[in-house]
Image (cartoon, rainbow, N blue to C red):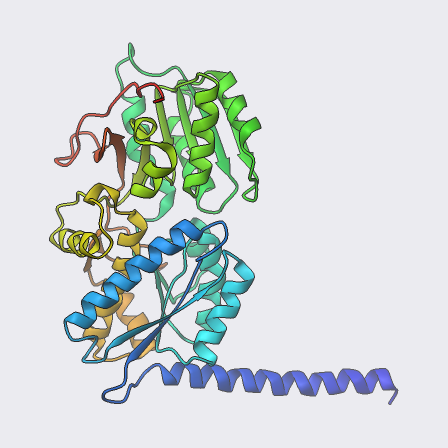
Length: 415
């Protein structure tokens, strides 16, 4: 046998051994999650974007997770076990997020896992923890790619994103002919969260409003001046922006203001929902009239939400309108896990996964949670929210008891 053949055989044996070790590690990782000695804490592993592109959202998610843990521990913990959160920063990196969850499970031996922020990071995370047999409950991975992956362990407590803009498109296309906008511009990041939202909106609006600009830009883009200027030059009466954060929306708003261009309606897929963070970045006068889709807002009358908002304000200060929707998404993850643990009477991930797939309806600060076979929560309703002065209010669906009249046209930019 030549050296090359021997090398291949050695590598083959090594690979088999490595695979065997991996199976043992996976098995022990899953087993360690199922039982906890009396008096020992339940450890929950989480990777969050505490730096990088998604840092604002990651930090808000950390607030939501920590707020939930504090509330649970004040009530006696999970099945009598104190909740301890093991949070690692992934710097908004798909590579680092995988490393983090491997470490959390195989080294830190966490009992349960919660998801990171964004569809981009949730998919590789769910695939990783699935190999260890862990459930991944998450609140910000609602892009189609998550559910198309065919994973049985991922559960998104938030409404899937694809139809987030459905209430908005229905409202804008149903306006009387005399006030209905004639032109519309679409600009979106090629992020797996934003593109499906904007593409679905385009299909729903179709030819009812003439498209005068349509651009997909790289997610890593940092200078939006050229694109924003092109939108302004189109003089579109409606702008639909596929954004994942406040800086992107703020950059477009600033460019529009400098171009002396104010669309009659401006909706962004994310950014305006981040409460005080958004207002601080763009100014209260500029925030006025900005719209965003979501399934929750600080003024929700859901009793669970009212309690959470009160706890948030007590801990972090501010007002209900200033509470970032990411906080509610993260808090909902904890609530759903707590109900699953209580129902299955333990921390066995296999039983938790089966329970969440059983068709049971659960509760959260965002409303009802019921997972389909893909892990989607289709029990919630999509809404459109708008900043009206200092208030963040629900405006769509029109006719919903919680909706107020849309501020339209959007007021001119503030000084």
